[in-house]
Length: 273
Image 1 (cartoon, helix red, strand yellow):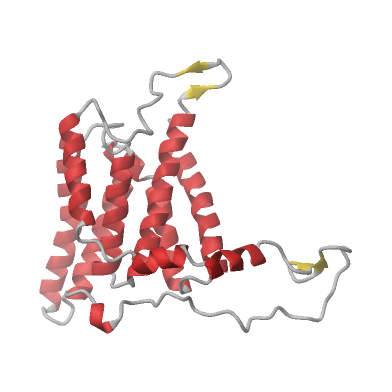
Image 2 (cartoon, helix red, strand yellow):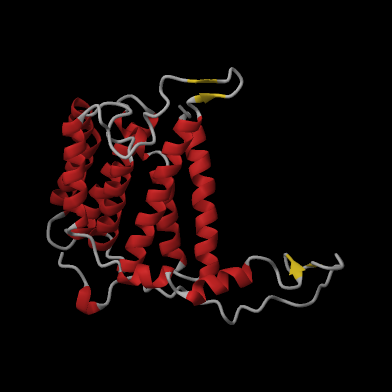
């Protein structure tokens, strides 16, 4: 299988390419774009969360601990004393980093259900839930983050399958077929559990209407096609046709906005704390 460095490098490239398209389409504000791009990078290493002593697993649970500890801290900042906030923050951090980490690895098997498309669907749904209910982002931003994570997740699975083929010795390794699969037939109960988890998380995800309408918009795809190549100059200097430098003009930024999807949900649809 591909190592951690390869996964995060390729995941970063894929997420960066998607972020470039998203930025060109002017879909979300820059602060949201950073968040959804990081979701894509996270997805590219998430399947290796079931490796107990792996860097992805340790980093994942450390990251989850940091994220939720600060989420708890900010949620109760005005309700408790400083001492109580310290206890809540540290307790949440330790719970996720060590408690959940240990419990998770007593139940998981590497290259099991987490290396499946079903797990990718569950993780994408969980991402949408976190973006919407925990971070308070707009439903369109929530599903954009879910899409980034899903594609990053698939990138990981595809890379592992590619590394199962030894091109030089023209042979297929025994691990071929264990990474990219719909579900894990070897462990039916784990697959059923993941299916139940996926259905459960999808039942509480925000509406997909904004995301679907945005992806189906002709204006979005027409705009991307128009911006695919520079109209007259490369990097604002070199003329595409003649190769001559043209200096003294600045790019038109009048059409640049902060994103068509708002940063937060409308007041009427803001989720309850």
